[in-house]
Length: 515
Image (cartoon, rainbow, N blue to C red):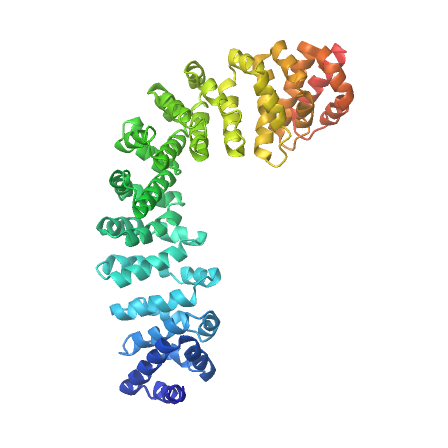
C-alpha cells in the first residue's frame, strides 16, 4: 500500500501536468490495486482527494479517458464511494462522454454511471433529466454487435425503466424496435432473460405496449411458447412463463389489445385460444387472462361468446374444481365475468350453464376466487329475473353470501357479497327469494350496506329494502325494529347525494305506508 500512496501522489502531479504516459502508468497501478483489494484501495483514493481531479480528466480527446472512467466504475462498486463521486462533480462529464465514438470509453463510462447511481432513484432521475435515455437507445442501435456495450445498455435500461418518469422518454425513442431486433438475434437464455427484464417494466406503458406490438414482439413470444411448451428444462419453463406473462401484459393496453384481436380473426387471438385446452398450467393461466383482457369491450365479448369461448372456459374450470390451480380458477372466472357484461351475452351464458359451472367453486376458501365468483354471478343475473330467482332460492348460496358478508379481512369479498344479496332481490322481485334471504340472516347486512361509504352500494341496498317492504313486510318487521332501520333511512334522507336521499325517502314512505 506504500506503492499506492506514491501512485496517488504522482497522479495528483501528472493530473495537473497532463503528461499522458505518466498518467496512464498511474491509472494502470490504481486499477491493479483495485483488482487486488477494491475496498482498501477505494478508501485510500477517497482519503487522497484525487476524485476531485478526475472530473477534469474525463475529456473525449484524451487517451486515458477510458481508464479514468474504469477507475471510477471500480471505486463506485462500494456504496460509501458513490456520494463522494457525486460530490466530486463526476456525473456531468461522464454523461457527456456517452457521445464518444470510442467503444471502450462508452463501456467504462456506462459502468461508472451505473455504479454511481445504483439503487438511487434520485440520481437515476437526474440522469433521465440529463437526457441519457435517447443517447443510450441510439448507442444500442449503433453498437448492437458489441456484446459488452449491449449488456451495459440493457442494465441501464432495466434500472431506469423502473422509474415512471422514464416511460415518456422511452416512448419517444425507437427502443421497442431496437429491443425486438436484439431479441430476435439471441440464442442464449441469459441474454433473452436480460432483455425480458427491460421489456416487462417498459410494457407497463400503453404507448410502448403498442410500439412493441408493432415491432413484432408478439410473434417472438408466440414462437418461444411453441418451442418451450413441451420442455421440462428449468430454463425453458422459466422462459415460457416470462413470454406468456409478457404477452398478457401487452394485452392490458386498449390499442395494443384491439390491434391483436383483429376482429377475433387474428393469428394472435387464435393462438391464445389454443392455450386454454393445453395441459400446461402456465399456458392455461395466460390463455384465460388473455381472454379476460380481450373481453374489455362489448364488441369483443359478443364475438367471443358467439364463437364458443364460454364452453372452452367452462371446460377449463371443470379441470380445476377438485384441488385445482387457484390462479387458473381466478383467471377463468375473471374472463367469464367480463364476458357477462354485455346485455346480449347474459341469456346465452346462462343457457350454456355458466351459473352451474361457477357454483362449483362456492366451497372455495380462497378470497380471490370468491371475489371473482361473486362478480360473475352478479353480472349474469343483471336484469335476468328468472336466473336471479333461481339463485336467490338456493339456500346454500345465500348462506354462503351471508357468511362472506362478514369477511372483514377481505373488503372486496364482503362488498361483492352484499351487492349480490341486494341484486338477487332487485332483479328477481320474488317473495321466495326475500324469505330465503331473511331466514338466512341477510337483512342486517343490507341495512349495514345502506350506510356504506359507496353511493352505488347505498342505492342498491335501499332499493332492495324497499322491495322487501313492498313484497314481504311481515318478514321485515322484527328485523327493522331490532336494527333501528327507520333511523338509518331517516338519516339517509338528508344525504348529500340526491339519488341516495331520494331513494331513502321512497323506502321510508314504503315502510311507513305498509306499517
